[in-house]
Image 1 (cartoon, helix red, strand yellow):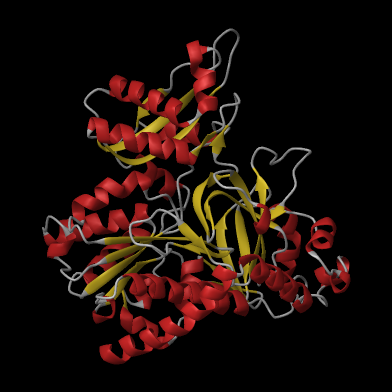
Image 2: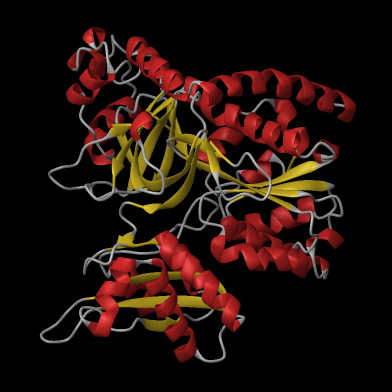
Length: 504
């Protein structure tokens, strides 16, 4: 498709879509309420709809009282029935695709339903909106003069009982219109390769001679790919390879631990970074401003949002609230009801609101990925911000990390044990640890209180991981690929002890 025509179509869509966005910015709670009842009405004759008598639900209060909040384990049996070909269980239209992601207590893997509606009105709509917002903020962009280098999951799609499952990125690539491949690199064939290590070299070979203007993918895996590109070409930075490269669209994991490494290989001052917040369950939020770490919550993608304050999460007082009741700067667990038939579903993420007009958020962590064995409430955001501060002070660079508690034994106090793989290690690990401990105290008052005079917690213990440790652990567990992540924080020692066993 000719570039001028692409730009013309993009401009038309931009104007049309911004009128719709203005509506939910002006009337966010009304938009969410209307969306909820459209979902309820659409699914009233499903098995779930009849079970909870959707037809008689007339307000949010009744919905919240009648429909229970569940995690994946609570939905697994119904999802398995749907995967075997049963229909009209929790959504009226056929569910043909299931996005496979990491497992739960009951299952090795989760299979998240992806409906026609969620594919078109959520995932693909978000991709268009992301481009719209970027182009609106950068009128001189030459984005469509080249191609987007996309880095998705490494698994191919598998058919079973008439349905298809695989990484969400593979499902999205497989269902894209044929013309979308013209503006992307690598080819669909390479993007869907199963062997991650061979796929990486194939991507390098296909992309180094393209006019790449944007990047899209998870920061950790994208960094591995980009370092391979520079090693293959012998260039010192990516602008020498792709001079028209102008933006990196990233999501999946926090960008904080990788920011300085990206700035080294993308040194142009006007290079842009745009963050997204999406998962197998849906696309939730998009950065809508240049040079911002805040994400605009998208309210018309067929997803109704509720939130549980983390100070009552998993307690007898646990109760969800609608978007209209959230407060600034408070941590919430996210609950979603979606146009793929997930009703009041715990996605496992935590967010805090940085703005209520419009609703903007920051991702603060995972409900399960935190350490709170001693009442310290250490979340991923604390850990990553502390590590970022200390790395700047010590000129260190981190590849990956994980942490777990050292449990109290007898009269011995507890502590946190960290395993960190450095790209550039600090000259003095003891000094690094001292700075890190102080940074955590400054960011988390609960941690500071537990560390005061070693009343509950001793100073952290830091282990230096050998090179490639986290890569080898992911490979051993068949988790190499664009959508897999290393568990950062845990209340148990399972992940840490497993990794320490490989750290030889």
